[in-house]
Image (cartoon, rainbow, N blue to C red):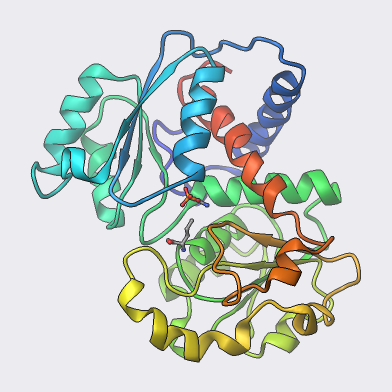
Length: 305
Ligand code: CP
Ligand code: NVA
């Protein structure tokens, strides 16, 4: 496995499934309360330039369960790229810690952090992608459906960091992925070209939500305005309302379709309360699995499995 984990398409298909196998093992051990101190004495520095619930808590708890410890560095603490250059922060933090996890704005900043860090860097979300999330999502689908084969996975919403990581995943693991976004909010064309060139998945862009969701096995959505886009929220709401995941839209999916959302959700916008709380929703299983998958990623990066 590469030294850092910045994007899913930097992994091979085998590495992805190795992480899933280790995730299952670590999850089972966690449920049995069986000690698994594979990273005993390790310290994880968590650099956040944006807010977080799941990423912060799952990484911090996860490294603790592995026998290590975490430091939370809030947006105002470091001022990465403003108070101090990214490459300087990288070299300093890497002298104190064994792993760095960072949630930043520009993707180029996490690439620079990794370039200058002597220890593994894990991407905890950038404006471009969110690889830990989609590794967790695919693992969650495997748990519920037993396979990723022959499933129609439909992402409805903004062509954002979540959409990009799904497309990156499709560049390595064969899936049928449908991205359904308004015309001016499509995912990055280069990311799509790379995934299409990989030639292993069926990737469709369908702008009509009903056509997209018809016969779906998985229906996935995310916020319409991501962190940093709050000023655009009102304008986006008008454009995205036809893409809301509600019972009417869900009626076009398969009867056993599952509903997913990376969270945090804006209930009443991209997803209704009814769908979020409905029996097809697996959003909290998905949230839980963030921790199990990230533990496996950290153990693999540390070369301890
Ligand atoms: N899904 C996710 O990354 O959640 P947080 O923004 O709360 O970390
Ligand atoms: N697209 C969202 C994902 C949050 C986990 C954001 O970037 O805010």
